[in-house]
Amino acid sequence: KAGVTQTPRYLIKTRGQQVTLSCSPISGHRSVSWYQQTPGQGLQFLFEYFSETQRNKGNFPGRFSGRQFSNSRSEMNVSTLELGDSALYLCASSLRTGDEQFFGPGTRLTVL
Amino acid sequence: GENVEQHPSTLSVQEGDSAVIKCTYSDSASNYFPWYKQELGKRPQLIIDIRSNVGEKKDQRIAVTLNKTAKHFSLHITETQPEDSAVYFCAAIRGSNYKLTFGKGTLLTVNP
Picture 1 (cartoon, chains in turn purple, green):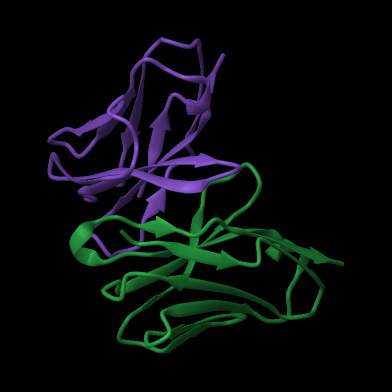
Picture 2: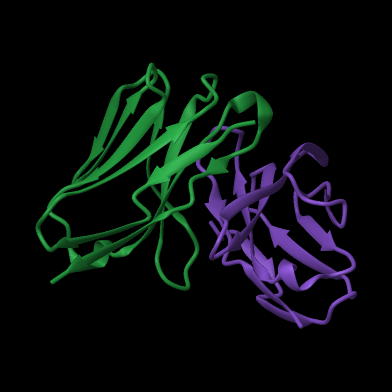
């Protein structure tokens, strides 16, 4: 079974721009979660989707948004980028909530 | 919301010694507690997990204990090896809110 994939792997943007990150879950997994990882804050939950519905959202500003498609692929969008948005963005998929989450390799976003 | 505290933030042991990492959680309704290992530059990977109806679980050199009354759980690694060196994250989730909350991580260094 192919693992979780994320594209692109690296991104460099400037302040004020917007960015879209993509995540393809393991086949059959319908739950996709997104996390922001930074050295100071660790892994912080952004949001979780299941069957195209956002079921929970973390404490991030409205500039962070996401969606899930009918094939369970998910995208997250960050608008009006700030320097502090520089981080590794990880997505993870699972069959159901409370099951093991399998992580993708992440997208390294650098905001200049 | 859920808050997960993890200690220590860094841990250095000699090869062959045991290592213990402790986490406390705030939401008494949390019912699933995974532990992830993240090697440098790699994605987090599940190493062991425990559910709230179990007090202890073991897998070869790794064990996890859960004390629901005190709301804490611990990771025990015996006979540590240099390849155990990594950052370890604990996490907790209440199935009904779909949000996995992570501790800040423990950098474990096993010295040969």
